[in-house]
Image 1 (spheres, one colour):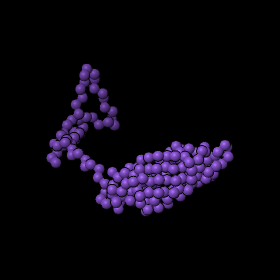
Image 2 (cartoon, one colour; image 1 turned 180 degrees about the vertical axis):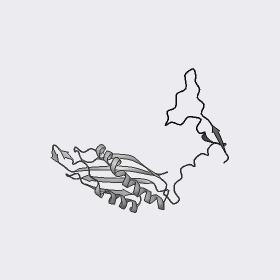
Image 3 (spheres, one colour; image 1 turned 60 degrees about the vertical axis):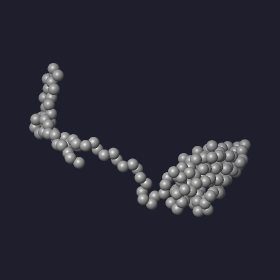
Length: 168
C-alpha cells in the first residue's frame, strides 16, 4: 500500500473574529507542523468472521413445546424462563460437542423435569444421541428452580420441555 504524507500548518480563519491568543503552555500552530497519513487506497474490508479451524459449527436451539404436568405455583413459563436465561448455555455446550463429530446432527431434546419441594430438580433428557443426553443430564444436576407450592403448601411439580436442535 502506498501512503502519502501531507505536512501542514494549521491555519486560523478569522471569520471576522480575532484569533485566540495561545497560552504559554500551548504551542502555537506555527511551532511545529502536523503530520497526517492519508492512504492512496481505501482500507481493505476486514475478512468475514470465520469459525476457527476444527471448531464445531454453531447450533441453534428453539423451544418446540412446554407443558406443566402438575398444577402448582411454579409454571412452565417460569421454568422455561429460568432454563433459557441460566441453564441453556450448558445444553448448548453439549450440542456443540455433538456437532464436532457430526456437523449435521439435528433433532429434538425432550426434557422431563421434576422439581421437588425445595426447588431442586431431577432432569431426564431423551434425544437422538446418547452422549448428548448424558451430557445434558450431567449438566442439569445443578438446576434449581423456585420451590413450588399448591394451595399454600410445598408441592412437587413436573414439566416437559421439548427443544429443537438445528445445526447452522
